[in-house]
Length: 327
Image (tube, rainbow, N blue to C red; front, side):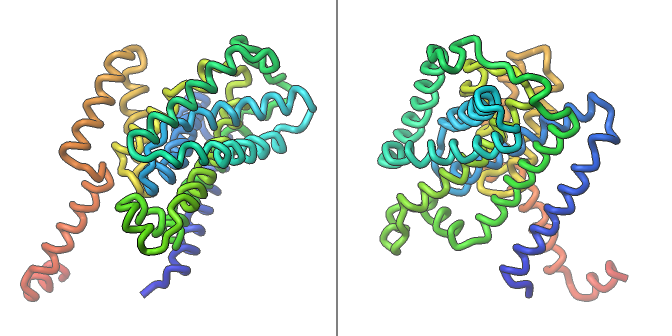
């Protein structure tokens, strides 16, 4: 029987191997394939970061656009106004988003259920409206990062790969930790968790801060990837709505769910129907409804139930038949 600590270390070793493979890819891929994989990794990271608070914690936040926009603008303004190298500015993106989440958690975590969802989306709308009129950040014109201050395309790919793997590894660690158990207890029944001694506000605040930090880092990565940013796109609710759809379709509260969901929604839906935005939205909506109605645990749940069913069938076979099959 493998202990929990050993499983955690084995999981981290697996993610390190995955990261090593991804870091070697930029020089060996055609430009178009590299671009597709870059966006797929970016969406995986964003969906995985949201999964910590929304999937594992059960807090359906629609305010994560604040952290994407905040992270992107923090990086751009730090580079432009102070001449700070982009790696340091990227770290500031995560730290500022975490600090912003900590401040916002006090009014937001007083709400629950649909009120929390509405409150978080209101924060995103307010932030976007403010940035459009804020002279210091370029108003609706946005900001342009000088090309000589941004990394090369290959380095940008590697940065996004690192952040996506870090988000996946962080989710894996949370799921295997005591903190994750408390977070899932709050998701399943907050009152019961509180009665058992779980400090619900503290745990939810910690999950929100971690999720926001990862999202802010990815927002900074979006800024160095796009070079030119403006508030209507960086603070758009489309970021978080798409991430939610990916997590729901793939499987909420799992590590594999956001990865599978990002592949299905970005690659199989958005890219396949790139010239048909109406069909994109329609198919995404149909997928979400179908998953909620037919497979509430997402694609991961379907795969797990199929695997468990095969194992049960194998175990229930007569011993003579199992021996014959294995032979």
